[in-house]
Image (tube, rainbow, N blue to C red; front, side, top):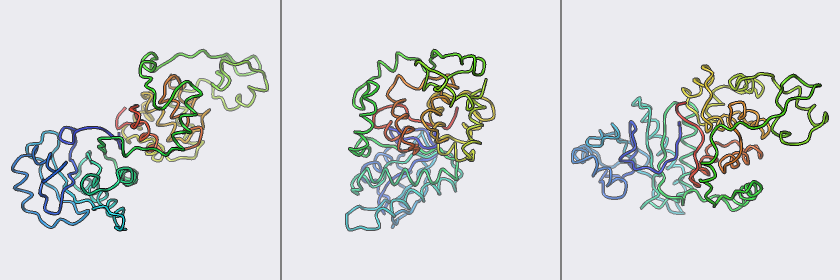
Length: 346
């Protein structure tokens, strides 16, 4: 996907380049810097000896040498964090911006980046994650690149007590909790679930399908009338996607960027009438800024149910509250070890 948060070893993830947080002398003396030098071998040390006095946020490029997972290493110095350092946030922004722009300058299509300055330099992990996510998302709006943000613990993902309580309360209505493991329940249900649907009564359109809001419930004409004019008979998922883009007055670029989809993945869905995997359908519901009822209909047109598991209801919480920040949703899903939304390929 264009931005994917992962727990992975920077020495093993297959990308065009990796970002190495180092010091001004490129010493390879500790943490990630040390591990990368050990993996790349002595020829990296010899090339790094050509540089000295690297400034904060400056980026230099070397070969990856003995590392098999990448071709280049981008070396940078992140800011040292202390409360009186008013420029630390801006310096960290520039660090990520410069690294991404350097990868673009080199014509590279993928990069793996750790949370810079969160080790011995003391930058708070949650703040660093917020800055990195914002910079990367801004960059990806105008550029196509696969960016992997590597995070090794959950400290950076601590959500506010209010948000936690609100989501947990919402999940409890459906028999879930943020902290419970429902993997066995999730595995019981297939991705595609054929749900019972009602036929529209004789006063409506023939064989029309009622929205999920009034499925499985008693209904009368007063209940159904608001939905009759909105229903599009025999509409495919692809046709629904195209219609929603027009009705919401959105640009295609805005939809796939806000859905954390690559242009390639979106075009395959949009132009080739492909039914996406469920995580991408959920992502498109976010990218289209659908309300909860619109999303239910949209997702069911792809042949999926919108329930039965914790991830679905977390996404429904955000839709219900008209909150369409895909990276915030993915950070929450990552924290609770759930599959994230969006993809670089379909």
